[in-house]
Image (cartoon, rainbow, N blue to C red):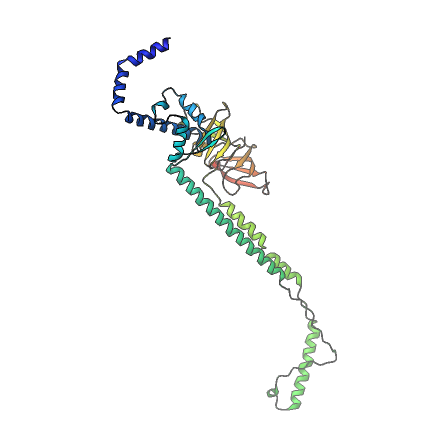
Length: 356
């Protein structure tokens, strides 16, 4: 009864009557104003709460009308929430689809920074594919070269043997070497005897040891060694502008959320588009969606497990061995994968974080 009386008094008040007169003069202007206000606040809530995720329209609407100073739909150009949802799809604000459970909407982010970031991601993805193709082509060439080297026949060296031991060795230097036949025959005989003597002194011609050629081949780098060396050099220089990984401990460094969350530690539960993370606070359990610029890594005590987030050893778990506070770096020992046991020195603080 009190509410009815209050509503009646409000309708009879001077301010309400004045507003009615103004609205009756140009009703379309007021409807357009409230429609724009409703649409703007609805889309802002959708973008802030769910980003580009697909969600039921009733969930957004119920959360929107829970605010005390919201714009009522009956003051807008749309009669029902379904009409408004269809309009969002036609105008290109959202992707909409109808299911047996109702209408679902998905916000289309047209922010210039978001579009620029997506273009950079696509460009980097294409560059990575080109690098992979070049690496695959190089590996194929190395394999072909390795096969061709194996197929080449290695020469076999044997001793110098004469078929007839009684046959003399004769060196014929031509007719112009002597003026008479007698002197020529004597010279050839003496040369033959000298040649036989030298052969007897030096012994048989030694056969080339095939193991020498094998050792030279071993000294040469194999195709596999060259590939491993190339991959190792590539890893040493491999860095990215994103570092978020699930199940690591991070610290919130933004003050935009208030003192309640500033400098609080949290665990990353989900990574969205490489640069955004859904984190869960360790002390309160609250969940927040934050950009990586609002987070920083956490350095544990020596002996604790960490995860490498950037650089050549990205994705490897390790044990923190020591910390160099002057150089803002640390030394870790890899304890996972094929590089297990390798010590990594001078690893910057921002390249690793504590594991939850």
